[in-house]
Length: 246
Picture 1 (tube, helix red, strand yellow):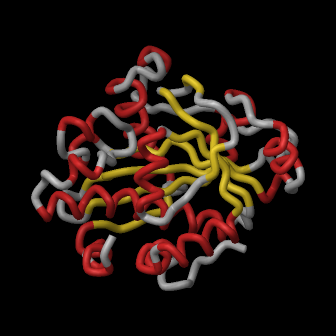
Picture 2 (cartoon, rainbow, N blue to C red):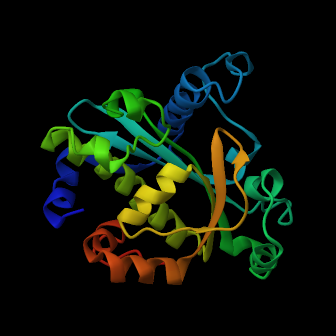
Picture 3 (tube, rainbow, N blue to C red):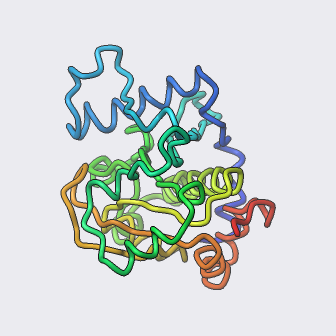
């Protein structure tokens, strides 16, 4: 990912806190469209208002990626925080996945308030530009497919993904998060690795909103690795070093 490509981000997108009630409703509407209508991960009848939500939203922080030219929400993500009323409550990954004993011990060594799970990473269909992108919730395709797109199209999808990671980093810093959890599609893990964003798999693949792998990222090591492998991406997702997790 070149610095020239990243520098065009502000021409198209603005990262907004979705904790604003109106924007939060829009993120839940986007989640409903992507997770329920398009992919069938959940039953549409459970959400007659067209807003996908769950028990974790009450102790999550949310961000949205606003597309300035179209005045539409392009993508959204949330960070599930420890439940302040029940700090020992498992995160979704801990409930749904088999985690190798050594990594489970590692997770348990962190204070719960320093752990968060990346969740509901969703990109609106109109921004998943080609057929193979529409098959994913995250909107990234294999590089061989991206190479077939026009230059302008090739810029937008990585910008959306990295824009969401900029939001994730900012939310992590704001909430003092030192360990990130995520249940990720293998394709997304590979392609993020190409940007220098490397998550560590901690257990076998599970069928959880599609075939996914449980992963972790220790914030300090995670960010240092990105900086070493791809300084342009580190500069972008930290906003020129303003947001750097411990």
